[in-house]
Amino acid sequence: MTVKVLFFAKLREKMGIKEIDIELNQSVTLEQFEALLTKQYPNFADLPQPVFVSVNQEFAQSEQMVSAGDEVAFFPPVTGG
Image (cartoon, rainbow, N blue to C red; front, top):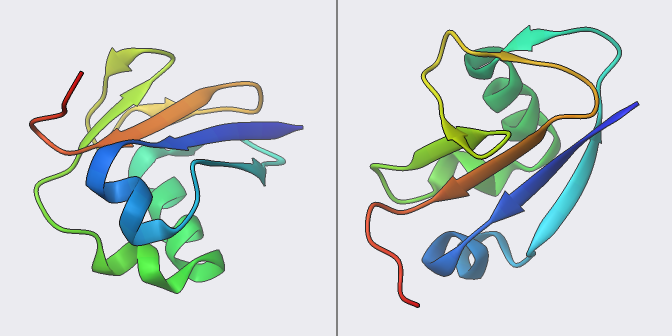
């Protein structure tokens, strides 16, 4: 199964994509998920910091679990309308 990953505002511009689907065979922490993203998309490591993250439309910390079927969104602290 997959995890839908969304990028917003300047992060979308830096990544060059709006959304991707990542295959995930088991649940991982958000920190592990970000490492997986960096491995598959090296420019992910170059995103400007800080970056806010939500899992299933709720703010998340690095210990949050990510599972197949989830939606993970990355966005800068300030976004336009």
